[in-house]
Length: 192
Image (cartoon, rainbow, N blue to C red; front, top):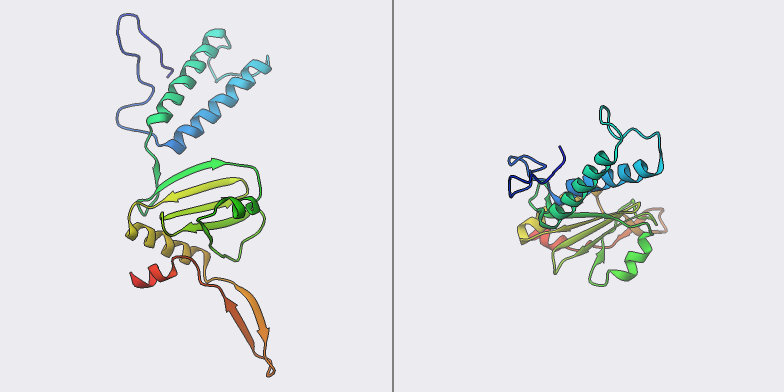
């Protein structure tokens, strides 16, 4: 239902019900979808706008109004939170994980067995933040409390498994010695 200004009323109609408030991630998804529809609407004459909605300038204008409303709502929308109560921000950046190795100065690399050019995890213990890059998708988890940060690190430890060995040495008797780097924040998990 598009938003429009009623000349009799001083307030514009709401796009969403009062019972549901969307977070930034959901709003950005709606904005991206509507922006794509608006671009296709202008470029293709045979593009169906929505089933049952005639293709007129009025329907295009109502889409533009809805897009403006969603962009305004994005400024005041709450952040997405995960199951551990930490704030999550998401965006897209087409690059490689090696760029983040040089740009994220306060962050330490969280070694996983999946580390590659298209994937990486970094942890900032001082600011209690976790940054994940996976094939262009950037996810920043900000933890407000030490307990939330410890829960996030424990979840990462369970999800990614033990740290992989960065070097293996074979002894004279044929046994192997694995050298594993300690992950950032591992002492915090053990203390709690």
